[in-house]
Length: 241
View 1 (cartoon, rainbow, N blue to C red):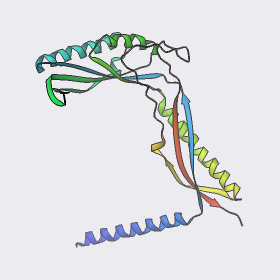
View 2: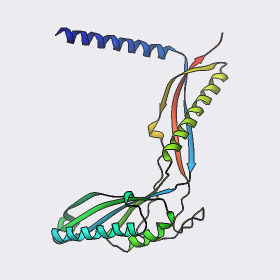
View 3: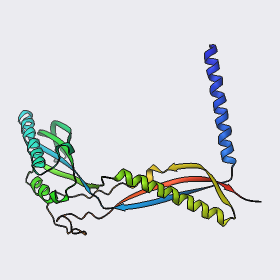
View 4: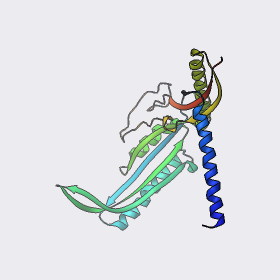
């Protein structure tokens, strides 16, 4: 072992030892550990659409050419309907052999081509126009339509602070019940698995009419979307006497 390697190993060992001592000191401190949860409900102002365009045929070349035409037509419909071109994205373009099961046998039935299209819109009044327009094309399926908010990150940050304050108040109440007080925070950790994602309403390709709870666009009900944050926090427990 070279001198450099030996020094590196020694330095690493010292750092690990100090870290272990520090952790042991933290574990030895009397503390109170709690979870704080906060939820903010907001009315969505964005709608995210996810589509799949698929066509099939006997020969690959005409299937691919026809697919290009179909996708171009869908993109034109979106743009003509007022969707911002910068908010439209195509992805997962693919073509290949089309295999199906018939009488428990796997059978090749020509070829397929597919493309995923996603877009975002803020004008909910366009919903009916787009829904009707897309339903005219048998090659288009609406995978799902989801809600979001343009200031989602801001709301998450505000909710995160509320969750931390809730944790502090909970720890304070527990400590005071025992005749103690809380000191400095020893741990603040966000529970990433507890973050509430926006619910995604799923629709079929059948037109329907749902009256909005807020009197909004015909065919949709925005409702509320919850933004939920959960914080784990530990505070030093101070007992007088």
